[in-house]
Image 1: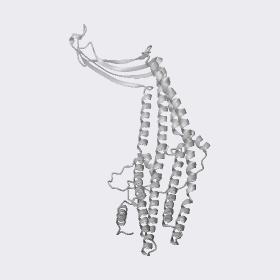
Image 2: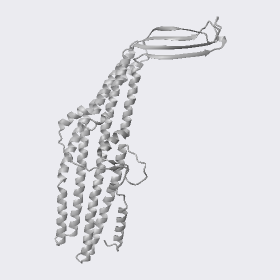
Image 3: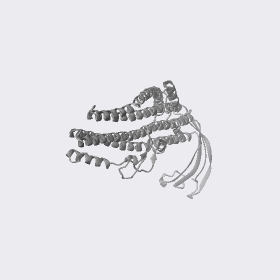
Image 4: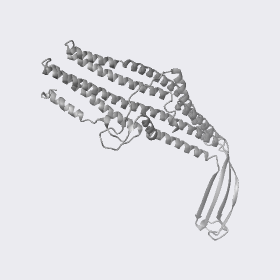
Length: 443
């Protein structure tokens, strides 16, 4: 390289600056993450999954609360009261009163509200578990795609590094020929320009790699408090081709059978049917049995703590003949919510059907693109070899060589892009059929 010219000096400075960038592929971190470890980490630490688990726990609490209405309830209560003697009735000799007692109650008949509410909450809890499975399915898709993006950007770094090597070889060749008097300084200048232009995609590729690493860490819920500039986690693995034969009818059938969203909506609809029954139960009378034992102050004694005690038992009947149309309003709301869930279920089926069809089509496209780009790299490498040979004997120009080198870089980039698209499309197809969360939902 001609470092005596201003352009050559600037090029040398750029090279030194580029060499100062961190070598991410060899950076140290607290652990190596392959795809399996990424999935396990996300299942344990991803915030969406953790929140979905808490919603299951919350719904379990609602079911426990609903069950409490159908089993005996025990209450202990007491009271102490003092009052002005002017309030005493004729014959009363004391102005303080107290009582203490325990009572057990059991609902005998509530118009079906208690059992309907309990069943509704049980179904809602099951629906929440399927919502958790759906969340896991979505998160695992994000993990796969973020992981593949890291591998893609790392492969693109290698592609650009290979391009830099070719351009450096071309620059050295032009410099040697200039020294031998075989070419003009223009050839060296053009090679220097090509090399300088080639460094920009490499710098961008390294930045894209850093961003991809941080996005993967976000999806995993992985935190790293280190203040260094290296990636917060080290990803291992390479993009690979996994053979798969698409079958739209099989995939649609699998999606309708496995997608957790459909199962959740079906359970929510059944839960709302029970909620509607519970709302209508307010039209019916309520019958409750009770029994208890209590102590209270002896109203005939002047001593503060003299007491009498005894038991009591009986039944209570209540029937709200007119509640200002409150029950009617709750019934209308419950009926509307049920109809909305029915419509949501139908909409979800249509949406999943379209999602599977689109995922299948995208997979077929990605598969065709991958096969189309497999041989192009070999052809481009041969094209570079031939262009150099022709240039050496004067049958081609330096521009021909640079153009074939750029074509080789494009072919290599297209190959890794196609492999990334294939893996991403296959993952989306599996997510559309509900396959990603089949095993993970049991964690």
